[in-house]
Image (cartoon, rainbow, N blue to C red; front, side, top):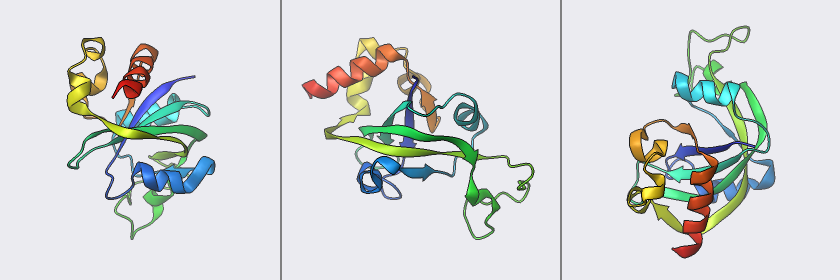
Length: 154
């Protein structure tokens, strides 16, 4: 099993929105960064755990946990000319972008803020803390376990 952090803007799709989808989950679409796409396409697997991270908002941080319920498939929005995720160079025969299905696992009682994560020496080599711009990023097991323990202390 792998661990991941998926960023989302809560005014567009939040941990509460994911909770409404239940275990069946929601299509995690709209990823338009090649490195993030490659992670989803080549590394993300059914059963992987995902921190749901609220970004581009007042309270930035980890809001809860999801789980991958369906591996990479062509992102349907790349073919829709009315979608903001439309890609005119992408075709059904040669799709450029993928999505995965993420199911809800848990909403944390309290958001774990980025500011708190950055204060933890145990996380100093975590991607999010160092160069956290990617919307899909791997999380090492040691970081996952530390954050889970930290969640129980906040």
